[in-house]
Length: 281
Image 1 (tube, helix red, strand yellow):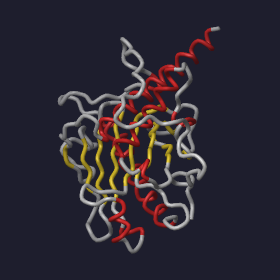
Image 2 (image 1 turned 135 degrees about the vertical axis):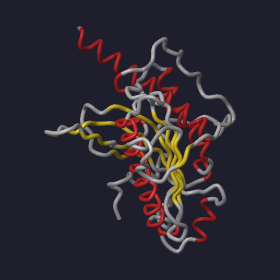
Image 3 (image 1 turned 30 degrees about the horizontal axis):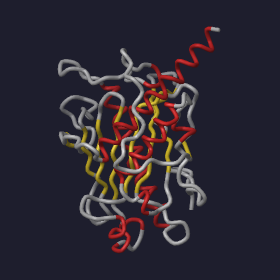
Image 4 (image 1 turned 90 degrees about the horizontal axis):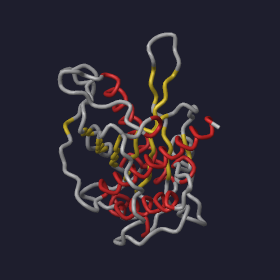
């Protein structure tokens, strides 16, 4: 059994990097908004163009995130099954996505390395909106103290190989629950990791929202929904997908995922600002 592709076994001693807030109480306030859009490692350097202009690179990056999140969700299911007796893994995990460019003699090749965080199973991680709410509180408290907040060091427990040039492009969640079954019900019905369905949600810096529904081996291919274009060539589908038009409800998992994303962006902006100050001294 290996966690090389997803994340290390969570620590038995401590579930959180810092004390978590109580769900239902507002976390520390967000840092004041900046007058300009975030740039560099924390900003949307690729945006969805108007209908008169198709951005193939943006579509390619979104598809790379879909593929990586799908891989992570499948690995999440395998890890949860293999460790269900000794160190039960929770049904929800965090994913942080980055963008890198591989130097080649031809056209640029993009990759989307990711960092992940698994949690030990328990009541405190069972409800996804509450889990995300707690993660937002951790990040905001660090920022309120003037500390750095980098998910690679503050939240993730394992990450893909990354260069120093990587750019943060989004946050996601891998879940082993479905809209119709809780994690306990999924485990009762499963006879192996292939019987465990999954769901992935991601929010990217260009505003893209992605939802992946991965059925078990008996329920067909993965379903993908996106708020932004996934076709590399207009009119020629590069994969099976449909438009995502769902509204984000207050205090939902999507809502708190957005708040975590904004907290990460602020942390990236502050780290970039400190880096610029050091180089100008």
